Length: 119
Image (tube, rainbow, N blue to C red):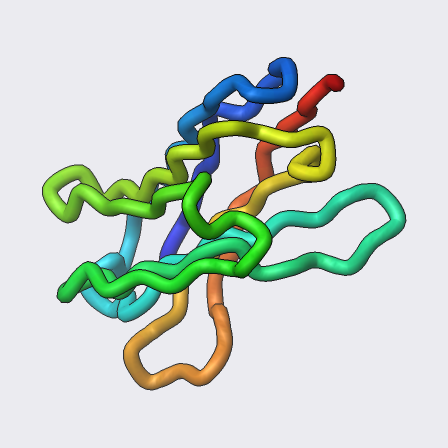
C-alpha cells in the first residue's frame, strides 16, 4: 500500500502562484508514476500532469503546459506541482495519484486539496 497526502491548496487571485505537495509513504519503492489530477464542481476528474518516479520524465495536459511544473524529491518521497499564472478555470480539488510498476492504472489516491482562483 502507498499512502498519499496532499497539501498546499488555498484561495488565490488570478495570476498568483501556488505549490502543491504530495507526500508518499508505505511501499513507495513500487511506484512507477506519480500524477496530479483535478476535479472541478460538476465536471469529471481530469489529468493535469505526470512524472516518472525514477527518470523524472514528465507530461502535461495542454491546458496547463507552460504554467504548471511537476517535480519530485525522491529523498523525501514527495511530488510537487508548481502552479503559476493561475486562472479561475484552474479552480478544482487537486488529487495526487500513484501507479505501481506492474499496473496500467493509478492504484493509490490522496484525499485531495482545494484550489480556488478568484478573478
